[in-house]
Every structure is written in structure tokens, then in C-alpha cells.
Length: 139
Image 1 (tube, rainbow, N blue to C red):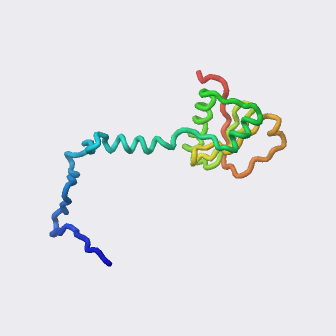
Image 2: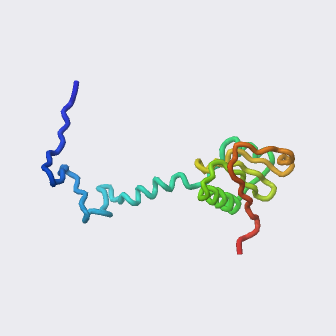
Image 3: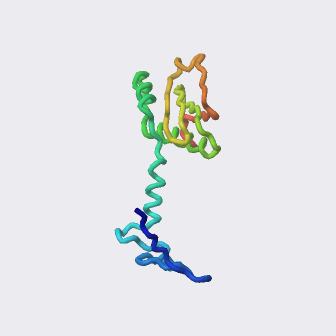
């Protein structure tokens, strides 16, 4: 079964008119009936993927090695991931003190982690960049 499309008829030089929606120049920034502007919705949706996540595998590795990262550590690591993203990286090795983290830059996710002694003679593959994070406060 086919359903007819009710497309607005236009003449050369005229604009189609839709019922119930008026999106003219003067309507920019107006709120939708729910009271939330399009800009707020867009910002909220874009902001969802911005925080750095730790995969289950990386979390397991950190727990096995008794490595804890506080909120300041995570902010520094997230900043390093964002810098790698700004340079076009896809998979990056992040060195933070004696911890090595492999991060998916596109997914903003720490994929795996290892500590100092585990890094010796270890080969990191499938990365396209490395970021060394200073543990010292920025002055």
C-alpha cells in the first residue's frame, strides 16, 4: 500500500509553508514548548561524550596493581587525551608518572593500564601518538 505525500505546492520564487512550524529569522533562540531551547539541548547532547571513561579491562588492571587515580589525576589525564584529540590522534599512549595508559581518543576511553615494572620490555602497538603528563602542578 502506498501513501500519498502531501507536499506544499510552490510557485517559482515562493517558499513552501508548513503548518504548525514557523522557523523564520525572528524565531532563532525561541524555546520549544517544553521550555528548553534548541541550543541547550544541543549543548547537552554534545557534552555527553566529553568525560573520560575507563573501560572494564583498564579498571581491572588498575585494581590488580592497587593503582588509584583521584579526581585531579583524572583531570590531568583527560586534558592529555583532549590535547591528543586536538592533534588528530586516534589511539594514544598516555604516560602519567609510572603509569602507562592506552586511550581511545575517539571514544574518550582508557582501554588498558599498566604500572612501572610491567612496562619494562613491553611493546605498545596500535597507537599513533604518546603524551607524557606532568604530575607537577602547572604554574
